[in-house]
Length: 112
Length: 115
Image 1 (cartoon, each protein chain N blue to C red):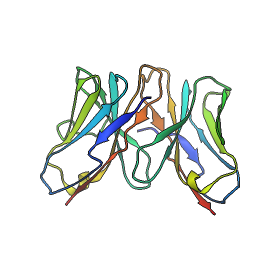
Image 2: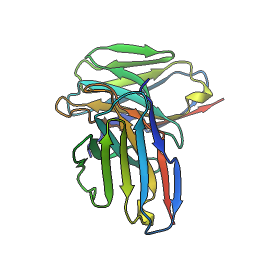
Image 3: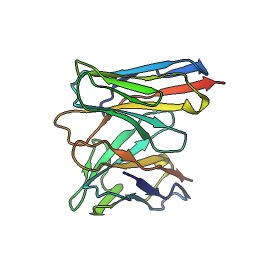
Image 4: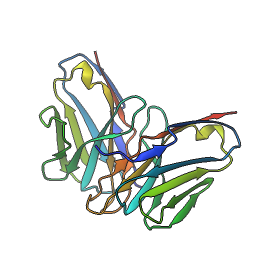
């Protein structure tokens, strides 16, 4: 199925550094979601965004719903080793019910 | 809240066996559940949307006779991989949402290995 363009595909950073990743789409979304997946587990919801321009934080995580409704970013400040994992963005289109379109994921690796 | 339980977490079986995976919403009722398949280092691929009390909606390319879905109650959906073969080996994940517009919450996934 359709995928969002998520970048970067992977990041290898030093502990304590800030991280930024984003997703773009050719379609307009009414919801943007950010999930984290650890190896061998299902994705866990980090942040949900429902309005264009919305900026929401969850601890060291901050995500924004782009004004154009075609993009979103996720920032992680002061990364720690347990931030390691795969981060997925997901968007919901207006007429898609509860169906989500997923980005390809960003694999984050943190060096202690 | 919004806990989704998936069982079993890992299955290893012989080729030709049928395997049933359960997805339960533990603390909420889900009229819609979703089944995904994930290959290593790839994103989630939607297989089908499971609707309580009606037939599932399958994505293009997913064989409905191969992947049987039953959503008999508001808290349980099952995926049965019939006559599984090695190429069916994958990580299967279900999700459910509280109501329209709410985020999907995922189960912990089932790793299926067919020998």
